[in-house]
Length: 484
Image (cartoon, rainbow, N blue to C red):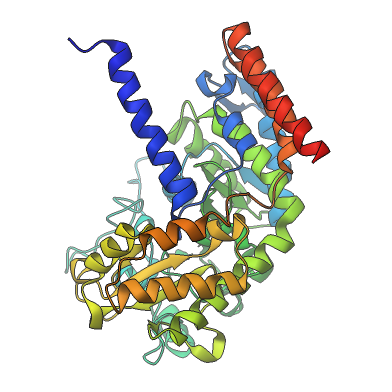
């Protein structure tokens, strides 16, 4: 009979194997993923990971409903301050645990906000009309009626469909908005909410253009930017608050290299017509959508935000330069790259390739995975269904963090071309090449991190003997690095 130790041992072995494969033998090019630093990961398993810290504003005072929360309260305040510095904004809400939840909290908060003046007996209404990016043109699922917008926007009684209109795109480049047509659609429909942001994301969004059109409307729409994919590029790629956005949402584990959480940032000065919206957003975060909000990852987010604020400019510039170089090298290798070559194909971390002439996107993605190159297949704007995807979507952010520079992506592009075009097996070559990129950048140097990790492990592990053993070995390694 299989014992508890047998069961756990078997899964430990498989976990170890997976860790080595994903972290040391593969090139991870999924644009919605990243690897957190060692200290961020340790923070995630520290004591707060099993705790609660429910709190809300009551009669002008922030009230906590559990004892033992002083430490994590200070963490949340400090993380809010650091993220406020990162965005250059007035308000930060950290209790959402994913980008999708962040969007849902804003949508629910806005529904509550538009009902503030409702008279007794008057029915509670939903949002009259929302503008977003078409799912088939790269829009994100979470801003669709089938996603986080579900049941929060009115239905058209004639069609039975939700009152949602899409940001129109150019015929010659479906990855960019058609500004002339956008102005006409805005004037005709006058939405209450406009949601910018995509999951297939290679160009900036027309925030400034829209703000200039709507800012003098008597009841202008709320401008929201879901930056999940490009949160770690805030400022270098686009700075929505400077362009007129009211709210920025996002997940904190894609280009922003923190743990898996969500964030809502707001820019609501005292004279803002939406000042009370922020109160409603906070109320939908708690008690609306969360109770336990994963306090270990909150501590990890603080560490990651320190890292991001320290290395922001260098990291962001390298990510964008790597993406442009990667796109250029893929094109030179014989693969069709989406976007405008005159613009370097991309302004973000993402690179989109068209592989239909070599096979179905799903099959190509699996072929790449079999060769230790991790991507995801993608329906391009002219595809009829996701199941018949013509494209592959890739991001350079994680491998940038592991030290890759522009010339390195030329080698990787060549390996990808061997797999995609010639159906060649290059797994061993890929594994060998990955050995050049195992040291994480844009965080504390390894020797400093190991010293701190030793102290954290001593405090986490229940057995003093085990803690001392691990800590001593970490400190020993740190000293070796120091004298090397």
